[in-house]
Image 1 (cartoon, rainbow, N blue to C red):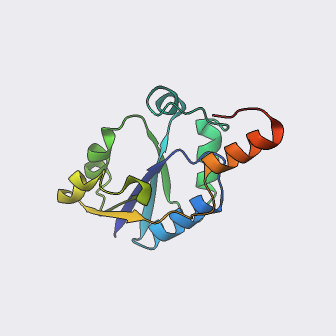
Image 2: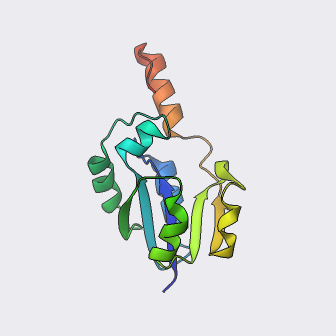
Length: 136
C-alpha cells in the first residue's frame, strides 16, 4: 500500500482544496491529511480560522479522497509523521516549492500546482471588500 500525506489548515473548504486532495490521493492508495490545530494556526501560522479544528476535521472526513485526518501541532512533526505513518509520498501545494526538499531522503516529495483562481485568502479578501469588515 502506497501512503500519501499532506498538510494544511483547510479553512473555508473550497474546490481548490478538493482538487489538491484528489490529486494527492491519485499518487497512492491511502491519504492522510494532517490538519493544523487551532492553537498551531493562531500561535505559529498567525491565522485565525473561521471553522474550528473539529469542524474542519469533520468536513475533511466527509471527502472520499481522505482516509485519515490527524492533528498538525508543530512544523517539526512532518519528519516524525513520515516515520509514524510509513509515508511514501509527501504532497503540498507548489507555493511551498523547495521548502520540504529536506524530506526527500525519507520519501518522495511532490509540490502540486494550486488551483490559481481560488484560495482561502482570496475568499476572505473578497468577503471583506463586500462587507467592509477586514478578515484575517
